[in-house]
Structure formats: C-alpha cells, structure tokens
Amino acid sequence: MYDLIVVGGGPAGLTATIYGLRKRLNVLMITKDLGGKTQYRLALPWIQDYQVIRGLEVVNKFRSELEYLEFARHMDLVEKVTNKKDHFVITTKGGEEFQTRTVIIATGTRQVRLNVPGEKEFTMRGLCYSALSYAPLFIDKEVIVIGDGDLALRATAELATVAKHASLVSKGLGKSLSTALGKKLAAAKNVKILKDYQVMEFKGDEFAEAVTLKDLSGSVVDFKADGIFIEQALTPMSQMVDGLVELDKQGRIIIDCGSRTTLPGIFAAGDVTNTYAEQVLVAVGEGAKAALSAYEYLLPTL
Image (cartoon, rainbow, N blue to C red; front, side):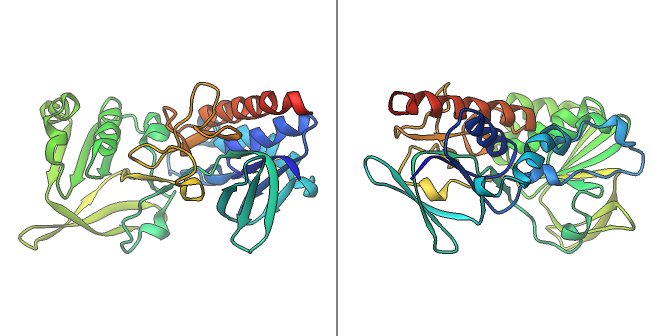
C-alpha cells in the first residue's frame, strides 16, 4: 500500500513526486515518460538557445533525480482509478494494480491534431501548438494560426501584438467573431481572417515554411509564413477518473485552491485541471501544491 501515487510524469507530476518523497511518503509515480511535453521544443532558424527558457531545463532537476530512483517510478499508462472507500486501486494498461491511500492526477492534455501531410514531420520545426509559450519569438515575423474556436482567437491576438502580420485560418469561427476579441481581430490592420479554408498540407525544407489551403470552391493556394501555430482544442487526459471526480464541460478536473478534487483523497495538478494557463511554471507550482495538500490529508494517520 502506497501513501501516494502520482499519475503522470510532466512538470506537475515530477514536482509532486519529488515533494512527496521529501516529505518521507511512500510514493510511486506511474507515467509513460519523464518530462511530458517539455521534451519538445520549438526550433526556428533565427533563434539562439540563450534566447529561450526551455521548459525541460526547468524540470530537469526533478527528472534527473527520478531517473535513478527506480523504486519511485513505474513506466506505464494508467487506465483506471477505482475508489475502495479507505484507499484507491490504480490499474495500468499493462494490467497491473497498485493500491494507494491518495492519488494525484497530473496527466496533462493532448493536442487535437489536423492529421494532414507534413504535420508530423514539421512539428516543433517551425510548426507548433502553443502561441502562449512562443509568441515573444515572432517579433516582426509573418505567422499563421489554424483553428476554429476561442483558443485560436486568443493565439492570434497574442501573436498580433508582436508579429508583422498574423493570418487566422478557419473552417468556421461562428459566434467567436462577435466577441470583443473577435471584433478586435477583425479590425486589426496586421490581421487577416481566412474563413472557410481547409488545411491540406504543410510544406518546407528543414523548417515549415508554408501551408496549403483549399477554399469552398476547391481552389488551392499556398500561404508562406515564418511560423505556423495549430490552435485546436486541448483534450484533458482525465478519462481514468471520469465518473469518480467532477469534471467541467471540457473534461478538465475541477479543483479548489488546494488542488483538491470533489473526492477526498484524490488531488490533481497541471493542465488536466481547470487551473488557468497551460504553462510549465504554473504546472510546477500546482504540482507542489497538490503534494503538500496530499501530505496534509495523510498527516493525521502517518
């Protein structure tokens, strides 16, 4: 029986695990990898490494510590968390079961991909999924944002504050354009909204340099850019606790200020929750908070 099992090995999960270990808890992290999305970094031809704070560098201390603590990690995916009244059972994809008194879910989100030619090849080489993280690198550059909802609008607005020109490609924004942010973008001189276009392919050499679009008439055209952002919806990886704790409409785990879910003993941290901003440093802080809350929960019985 573990005191704490942390599900997920990204910034939030790594931080929570190290905090739990330093509180002398019997901790196990279950994850498919160490580092999560921080293992990916955007490469651009004009950017030097010293200009960017890498997420991986921020969490590398915790990651390196866990790499040699084999007793504290199990490399697998979690499929289900079951409530047994006085403890929880964690079932992995490999069919193993682990018992624990508390759980921290830190599984993050999955990007919704377009699944078109060139996307996989150019991911993080001129093509990425987070304008919130990389917008400051595109001062006086030409950028393209692809998406149909509020996330795409926000990304375009942020890029438009620094970029020379930003184009928003969409199959249909609907009511989003009637919002205050949508009206601002429609009036901005350095923003072009390309409605009713379908992305067919990404092109380039070493880096993504253009996107091929098709309109409703079937006409195909290539748009060049210094950077391309796919800003579709984020899918929270919360399925293992669906029906066990309360989720919001997007499927994110609802937590309070102490990272507590609606079921005592289960905590959550990072992008899988309804916490504001999908950022590495936010996730690190939330992971620490979740571990401290779990420790407080356990303290009367330790």
